[in-house]
Image: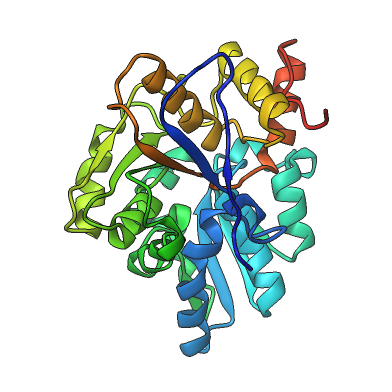
Length: 303
């Protein structure tokens, strides 16, 4: 289906830029945003190889885990996730992301964080993989060459008129795809959700030869899956003004960063800017549980 490209405004900001958002969050009810595109060619490859099981990695709030489970359910694959951290092994039923993934048939292996960091070198993880025949392995976050190919299709003839394109950055696959699909006159701004994400530039340049991008490193809000009160208030104000939900892990941080850059005059005047909404809205539920526990302002989901 055609993905809407909608104009939007920032709260309390007047600008002579033209601001639009590409609503990739609407592309599919369960495989939303960039995950749809990153999975597209990986699924085709798994089918070509006649693999029966998809195996991947992620944390307890991972959009990628959620999307992989949904892809498997809809395309007749078994799905297995190797989850970072043993501490959630007995409490995952209370986690909406993992609970829904399980309902779609996904099985979990909870591994210590020390083993998870090693991945390819971990004897524990390698023994898990060895015991599962005929599987197709998808990297953490879904980032590989096939994911980049898919993500390049986020951009099309409908996006050619934009000068600046902004996206959240996790593992670097989506921004690499956007670079691949970008025109010569377009510049990509990537906003990592991770703290100390300078290394991502090297990772991105492994996936694309294009260099028409910058990483904006100042809007991680403490790191992956961490938020602050000003971010939550911004997401709520944006929702009330534009009737568009933003997730707090990725797109919310990217939009806050773009707002700050425009407010501080860091983007030259009269640009036509396209922000990519990368979905992941199911993560709001888990974040609100944390916010309730800490007696903080909640993310609004209804007006």
